[in-house]
Image (cartoon, rainbow over all chains, first blue to last red; front, side, top):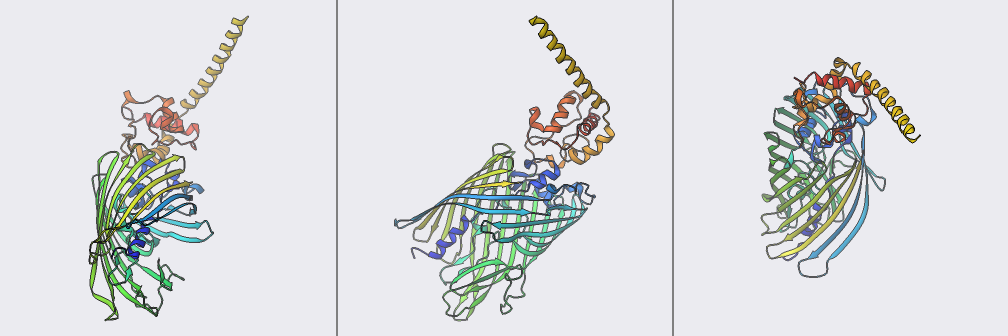
Length: 424
Length: 121
């Protein structure tokens, strides 16, 4: 097998940008600079992590009546995003590749009613308005935080990113997710194809309970999981958040819930280790079936992350992710008895030049199925992150991905992207 | 004749300066550390610490540690404290991590400066 088109197609997923998230309304409300909560916007530092964990308030204000619920701009933000990109795909056999350049206005994100409410509550709403006019819910949840500055319980209900991490386990400071967090497991040999789920790809509907004691946090969630929909061999996954994005009553996983637990331990102010575990169920379409057929994939994901800050302006981040998934067994007309293993890891450095400019460099390795020879994707990502002026932020990222089989490099994908954000 | 014009202009400038200075002084003289304490607790303590030692929780991740106000010999002048509070650290040659508080009135800032000075020993 010199070229596996499905494996190659998966490589494109990592080009999907991870939305940068930094809300000026929090800075306005607190009267502080972005650097108070961000090492490199949008990556949070310890203060930002604690602020979020205390329900978008300084931890010492937990349980204190908030006198600052007074200005519109303290609870509302808006952000637009424009992308200028160049992408080139080169097959490993030397044949002509493809090049694409584009300028895309991604649209705007609205953050109404976002921030701390009263003594113990908070809400976060993020509505994405695409340039073509579509509206989607990226985040919409309420949280209650009860206890003291160093010892409290958190409850979250709604649609949200599956977990709130720190450093290596949080959202990236550049544009792209690490492969191991953004790329689904994939079994080429059986023809099953993508398993669709990846730890950081989807914001899901969930109920989460968390406990914080000083630098330790443990959060457990029950999640609604994903739904795979489509026809004619073209399928896509979405979070099952209700309405048309619901699992069909005939789906054997119609009422099944996913489960997740995440732990984070700070070591000092800036260093931390994190652990992640997810158990999920997802009905996957059987590739090549003449009639729409699905099988149930009961899968598990586990990950370990570490974040070190040896110097004031330098962070070293790393993570390793493992996954266990079923394939379709045609003989048994159901999921295979054994599961296949996928794994990946990444190592990254973030360096800040000053309050506004920083560099990101990352190496990625991901093997979507260890039972399929040495198929893997490797990537190198370099990014320049800068707050250009006021609410204007630019992130320039170059990424090169090599998709390999056991025989040779089958494809090289390069991308150069400039994302311009304006947030108020 | 030319010398007389220069002298007149100088006197006029000096008179205006005296008036302005006395206005500022009056505002500073009327400042209340008690009133400033509440504003400080709400807006400044998160970085500069409740006791003005520069040890507030929000300041610990900053590249430049927030200024401590406890050492009288190192405490900035009233004017500099006023300007930093109103316009931010960059306006007085300090870190831009310190945002200004343009929504505070001059009287409120004078109150805050008065309270900050109570930390200095």
